[in-house]
Length: 261
Image (cartoon, rainbow, N blue to C red; front, side):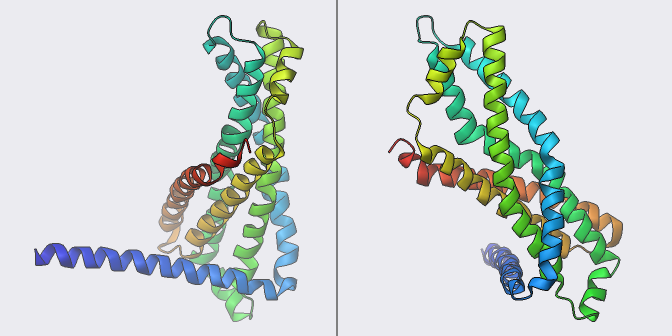
């Protein structure tokens, strides 16, 4: 029994220490705002890297997402159901769930892994130590710009993904099924509220924050050379993906009742 208690205390202590380290890292990110000369130029570069360079991948993923969602929705309907329901279900599925969630998960692999690898490589090659020697705040220079770019660019990419997916859904339905444009547009307008778009953007904002924070932190604490960089990169992608799924569930639990309000 004493062994179990000691193991539980050790595990609890480890969890609390890990949370504390991340809390200090978050504090340092907030403090870094005081030095705009350090983070503003790098933020612009990171917005281009995370946002503009991710546009082709976002469009490709969203196009297939919209087409598959619409096609499956049409052929799962029971006979006699109005075809406008296809537009309604497609819109709700993409805007409320699949658009922000899949965009975030895909970009975790593209942007998050790159972020961790870059910062991790700087850590193991002592470039971060050099920044500290030169009186640069490494968190303000490395983590803050990536965090700001994440919370700005991921919502923008989700807007693009939602629009692309809906356009792809329309193209597939009118060319490969019996759903007409009028039916699809009627479904898109049915029970639509502005909060549905806000709901999607709230998810995107939180997902962007999670990706940027987790991946920056894991890169920042990397150790043990090239092997450590690979380990940190894999761990960052896994943790960020789990955080995205947890946040998705929490947002749905809290805000879903207001969608049709």
